[in-house]
Image (cartoon, rainbow, N blue to C red; front, side):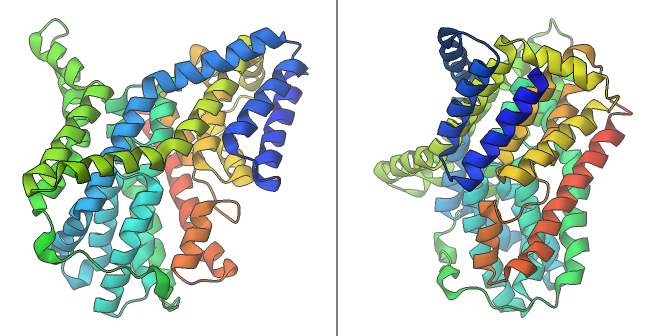
Length: 437
């Protein structure tokens, strides 16, 4: 009976979000309350669980998410993303223009939230298409595959960061493993898949062609790279040091401190403010305005994550998550496959990758107690599942359709297939990696 109640709650969440178009945060709260009542919890216990869940989830995440948004906004507004794209195109040459765009999407996508990265990168794709006379879909898919993978796999993006907390994983190791899985996923969904898309020659929508920042106003290439990739560098280096250094050594303790996500993102934002703003004589007021805009950009995401935390806490406090874990264990499915499958089903039903990943983690996380599966891989498998088959209930689907001026049918054949490839490759990579880590 408890399992049926949880299934009914998820179905209700799907209906509220997709059919009734209710705010996702409100939907989470309504579903949490109704599920608690159906599980015979006291009203006071339900409200306490909701408040505790929101507080526990956002308490460790909100600073990282906000700092990540601030850094991404600085990269976008300063022209650093445009500089990275131009530099890589010159490095690879016209023959490998797809690969340069793909790499640009990956580098810029790490600090940028998905919607910001999409809006920033698409005009660059159109500019390159006009210069090379190549179809925009053929050039765009590799870059957008990179953005999608960083969004679903890699911290400090909101969903992977929240999943790391739920599965008690290590952020540095998750990032390292995530990059290992991201490379084949992006190549297969990008340059390999896009070979079959050259016949999509639709011109982009005129209203979406943005003017590029003048070259003389852009920051330097190395400055842009250092500002964008400092979080990756700090997380990767400190994770490697902690594997190598003696636990009692000063170097180990320094790596632990510098590897704390809050410290990493604080240093990255301060560095970005100086290198991309103040050092280039950008007024302090404008830099602070960028910071304020960045907070507004992620307000909705923060609420969604808080709502998912309430639902997860309710599953724990009602003891139903332990029952579900026992039931699922009897299905004899590999935990990675199970996490991916649940996230994929919720993604297809709801459309939001963040909601899919966090909801699936709340259901599957209790199994980790009795499982020997690497928690970092559970983060990646769940994140991969949350990217599965984006279609008409996903805002990314409609953004791609409108920007690239495609029909719904052609968007399904291009965008939706690309997202599916990214998701399936992530699952296969997680399973293969689980054999050696």
